[in-house]
Length: 225
Image (cartoon, rainbow, N blue to C red; front, top):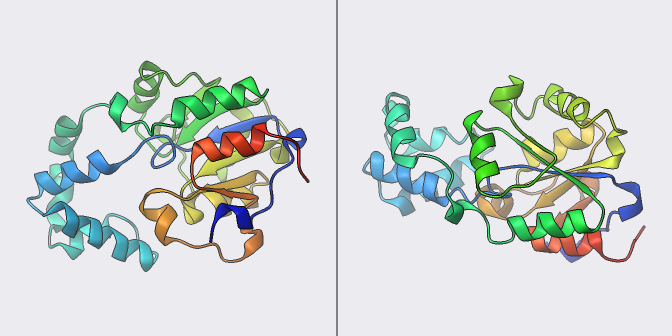
């Protein structure tokens, strides 16, 4: 189902746009390629395993079990060395452009996701110019825990939840809990979860987009009910 099937959010009802990290502003392809190389598994095979566990609503780590690499946990430190920090080519091409467009339209922009604390400084170095950049490890809270969203609101200065949009690629971690927490939920349909998952009903997301460029265009354009 295309994004045009969803209603727009009236820009006048929003103050903040908060972006997830993985598969929202960061393309995680290099991370999964690094795991495939480290575990000596063909990348396409690991990608298929990931798709299978997403389809059955399982945790993504189960993909390693499907390819008979249950010892992956013992390789995490080696993975971190190989993968290293976020790089400029990990950013989705529209990430910086869309954030600039949202800010120019008068929105306040934040970034918050389930990531190690070190990613905050890495994103700043890549040019992520948001008022708030914070990772789950810094909060000691992770999505989909509703406490993550409550703490996020506190860090934003306690705005009314409905004045904050949370933008993410996952229905389970981003869209549904954000709505329960009272935020406006925007689903960006890219990456494995964005392609495979589906909404439980049409009203589960306030807006569905295919890219951050589309998000900026639709929020920064004429107001709609």
